[in-house]
Length: 455
Image (tube, rainbow, N blue to C red; front, side, top):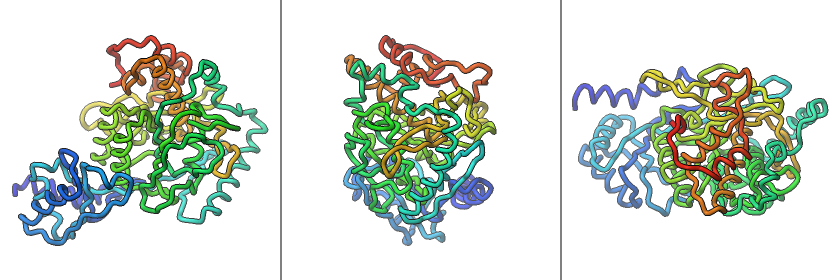
């Protein structure tokens, strides 16, 4: 093994752990667990044989492929999660990366997310530890009361769909019918009265729970497809609920990869990821986002609640294939909490891209409550499903015309039709504020073209 190769492997097994000590607690490497990515999709036994042959030939004995029990387990996959005894890690990584069928080996990552509540101009960052569903509901109800007090003073619109004039498209018979929407979040109750077309619910956390113990997933789903009280944009869309975060707001790279593969197999049209995923250093996650787009999935994600500082964008919203959404208030001011561009992780290679792509309402927005009825939330994780719901509505209208829409044409239409906010720089608003009706006009007469976006 060359000196350079040894240095690379040492960095992989040790250096990354050291590096993340200086970053936030949101994402870190899981000791002795690795994502083994293959060059193609193979059945479980075939993948096992490839890994086994590589490790046994190098004298590595203390290893184990971690079992994954979820909706994708019965289908071919392009990765495995491997546990390797620390004493054999260097030798194992060298053996695996030299195998012709194995694409790469990277550390498994754990993602710990925070729910950021923005109340009366202040941020209340709450790390949700494991607790009973009743306790979580009490927490949200307490926060909700504080929101309602604020609404009495500000006369916030009660229907986000009316503000963006979705009712104009509804009168044309465009309601989201025929569009599959994947919601990657904290789950959804099958008996919630606001939803009439929940096509499938899947759990990727291993908890065996499909319901929403926090209320975040319910709120996001409501903005996209609620059909009563606090209306969503596309009430007739088919919802595919992916529970990828536990009630403790924890997820893993492997959970996302399996769920993404399943979404591709289900041929979903739109995927909303409000909470965000692993950071940009998680190459399997980034690669899978590109694969989603290559398979025609339009991905929308929140850019993060780490404003007003610049260079604070979250992954995957900072990826070029993803529609990254920032937040504004109903008086068209950039929300203080909304993360700002440009993308910074590419700077060592010479440049950074403009982000966010677009902004929409993310302050004091009404949506579905986990216990029924409506509540109000703020954050870019609210603005993201506003755009996702609008995109779902647009797709249903274009498909009804017998036309085709893809991630590139949708992104071009959204950005070309957006309204520039005066006095706001491009690293705060991107191309501007979402204009639903203008986007529909652009898509209705869309001709493939070259533009700066997507880029």
